[in-house]
Length: 626
Image 1 (cartoon, helix red, strand yellow):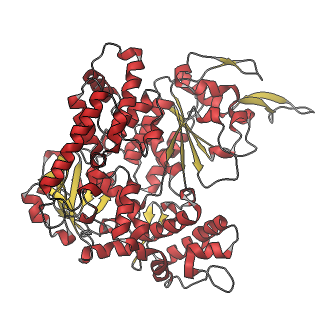
Image 2 (cartoon, one colour; image 1 turned 30 degrees about the vertical axis):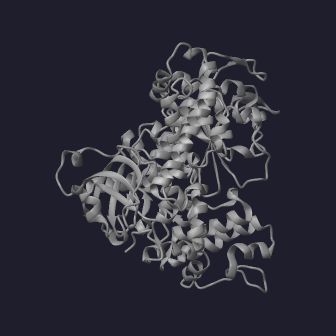
Image 3 (tube, one colour; image 1 turned 45 degrees about the vertical axis):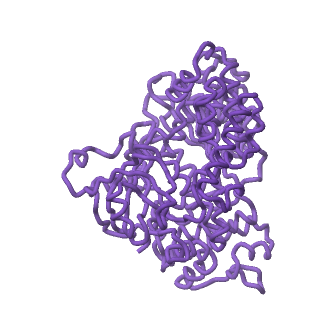
């Protein structure tokens, strides 16, 4: 709440806010928009303030009010949206976007509502797919009757006030930290989930659950977020139209559903649809292999590829960057149903995509790993020894590299897409590897601009149906950053740790809680580039299930990587692993596998476990665990 409104009655607070609106309108009349920035109460509702200004001054503001949408369109028109990430009010960013629109000759003579309609029609920043979240209606679903009868969903954490006042997850995290300081390691994740709840839109889906094994209903969002101060608790609400025909029980508990809020992966949504009790027509529809069921991350990469032609997936080790790239390959080949298939089926599908047909130059999926010795002759062309030649002496033959072979295959099949996946793309000398082909990576030059290759003198272009995905570990500082000229030609996407897939427990240790706690310490010591991904706690794409598996992963995979981050400094290692480091030797203690889950829970999961205490009356969070 703005400090100016604290302690005031409702009427007094409204009079204060109304005065600020009048002042804002007067400032806009004078063209003195900087004065609006000083109005404290209005800064807590910047989208609403911008909308009001657009209503009263329709020629001075675009009818676009979401800060994230303004940033999206600003970048689209060549502006610098990063400057609006903090400190710049939405109405000021809206004005800058308006200036960009007025400078664009394509919009000459357009009305501002026509510009808005065009931008949203052809460059809509909102997700194209329905968002699906699991939300527990209170502890042990104690609010379910109210939510069902009043067609809404409610969550707690009322102390932070209306979520509409927060512009970023970090800002909301700081507010959560004030009330629940014991859970600071997990509050950033919670803040992101709560803002996702706030930003639910009409048509998004909500699965209401009781505990970790029961689905109560599936609802479709009808009304946006509101804060209901008139109810005693659980004041954050979203309007929902419920369908109880989805009610069902799972054969085994979903440990990721311990929390109030959790994203629902496509495979689980398929399972819920299949488990529907009534024999509706939808239950008979195929739910695998369609675009509608592609994971959001796959769709996002596909969108970037369509826009840029090549993407670099970057993030800490173990976050599934290569897996995501290969999932995109499956989706592009119309094999989206294999993305979440059992490991054997998925591997077989990828092997089929990687197989070069007898008369083709390259497969639809080609993989490579860059390293310091990888060169232009490997990727484009060069003279290489002819092992089939007979006679004395060394015979060199002009040989096409990987990229030229893929381009040749793409030219012969222009209606098909050919994907190159490059692991560790930043470990290669990219300017040397790509050479003159750097220019041809730009989509507007694909298929129309040719260069002469210096080694062979042949003409080369890059077909429009060639795509490139590179992966790089953000923690890898052993090589220099990617060349600036190349960086301009790639889109970059962060792939953070995905805690939602760790819906398992080992001897009472929640794997998501453990990784969240460990990453909180790594972040504090080394920064966000040196976290660990979920892959370290997975086996065959499923969470680890036994203490022996956990012990092997911890001692032989996680500890060596953390020790590498610590550069052999025992005190630094102790700051991350705590009591698991022997004070005398400075090394991680070796334990019985059966004892390790409890030790890890004491060291890393306490802060995350404290989140569950919010359901006990200490806090109205309303966690959904059994």
